[in-house]
Every structure is written in C-alpha cells, then in structure tokens.
Image (tube, rainbow, N blue to C red):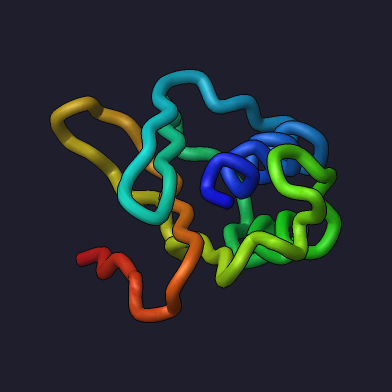
Length: 100
C-alpha cells in the first residue's frame, strides 16, 4: 500500500501541480518521505484528496485498497539535508506524525 500511495502522490504532483520530486525518496515505517530542494507551492489537503479519489492504479488492484492514506499537512524542513519533506502515511489511524 505504501509504495502505491507514494507513486500516486508523485503522479498527482506532476499532473496537477507540475511538481517533480527532485531530491529524496525514502521509506519510513507505514509511510514514505519525498524530499524537495525548494518548498513546493501545493495545497496538501487538495493533494491528499486527489490521490485518494482519482489516482491511477499502480501496485494494488485498486487505489481503494490503500487504507487510511493521509499526508502530514505541512512540509517538514530538515536542516541537515536542507530539504522540504512531504510525509505520507498509510495504515492504522493511530499511526501519526506530530510536527512541531
């Protein structure tokens, strides 16, 4: 589910926002991180809605098989890598990331 959600996020970023991730792709437990050298100008709630409702099928039979997909609603700046990170989470609701 996680890789499908990440692929769908990248697809929607490119198709609807003209944004192509340029730096980092990484997996975290129950989620993924996509890094950018510059902070994209995107509405993360709109991005999440588009991914869940209109995404193409990739690794799962149907995008509806991606359970509890959500994005952290702000980009996280990593001062070590100097990247803006988009964090996506799938799976159980109790799995969440708190951003300071």
